[in-house]
Length: 444
Image 1: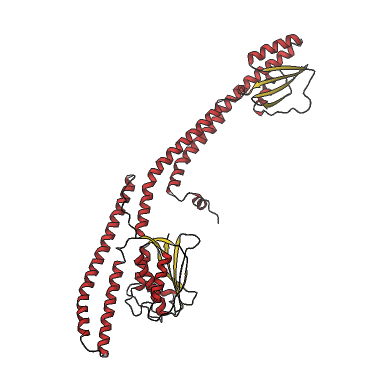
Image 2: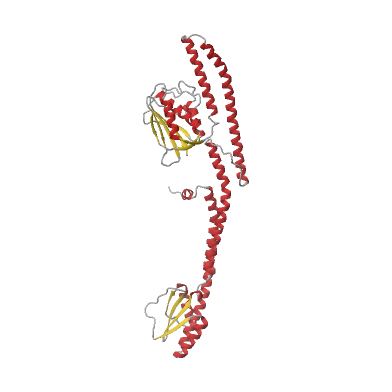
């Protein structure tokens, strides 16, 4: 069902500047439309009617003059004198009469002429009218011929209409220019705030952002700066706390490793050494998850080369299995390269751990709004209902495929955290290879 208000919302500009401009311009346009209508409906029409009535009266006078002075010489002299005083060009054509239907191409004076002839002459006279350049060519049928008059058009039409319209257009353009300049200065601080918030959401620094604009906009900008400072302070405190915990725990682990190294190579000792190695790896995972690579700044990076390097590093693994690639060339984007490389490593390791085939794809869709990195495998996959649970920190799946088996349960959590720190997203879906597809979408 068609809804007019929904259609109107779709037709409205999406940007604040366009909507604000419509709010200012629409009342001005409506006001000028009403004023113009009132001018032409009342003042202009009344003035034209008065002028036309005066011209019709003078035409009736000339018709009466021609009919009451049939002598050619006297008639010609009187017509010349009257036309000179009235500013008309008058001529008389004896013996010619208007036959057939009269043609009228100056409708604004026809009714007035008919009414004036009936009131002043007692009967209607056939006449034709047409506009020629700046004149009204009027031919009136009289008793002995046809009276032809060339009347200046400005004697019939108010000449202020063009000036009035010109001033209306000029004033509208001036008001529009003032509105654009004013709105641009008011909207620019809001645009800066939106860009700063978007950049912060993508993990990029905005060092030169300062509150500007109206009081409300300054308050919103200051609230954003305060929020950003609190988030950064929280992330720093969390990182420092876990770094301290990791450091404190690594010290006794190092002593244990030294003690185990001095003991024999019995199966029990090898198991203990492996436990220490696993504990060190888990501590590193905890620290990386807490840090989220937050200390790294985003910089323009060749994603094609970064993905290729990550694939090459993973292909040099212990099993030596190759990884298929489909990488678009020349994809440049501002990212945190070390963080994104870690995200890719986690996804590729999971794919290789649970599948025999792995495929990494980098491409930019036709809409150009995002860059996508796809990691496919042919493993057992994850049921759709459990895919979001796979991103939960320290969570292990109970089904046959466990993406975090043998680890700390933080691989996918770290990968999604890194993707979201870039303003993007990491999702799981079915792979064309039959297993799981991990998709990283990064905004351009």
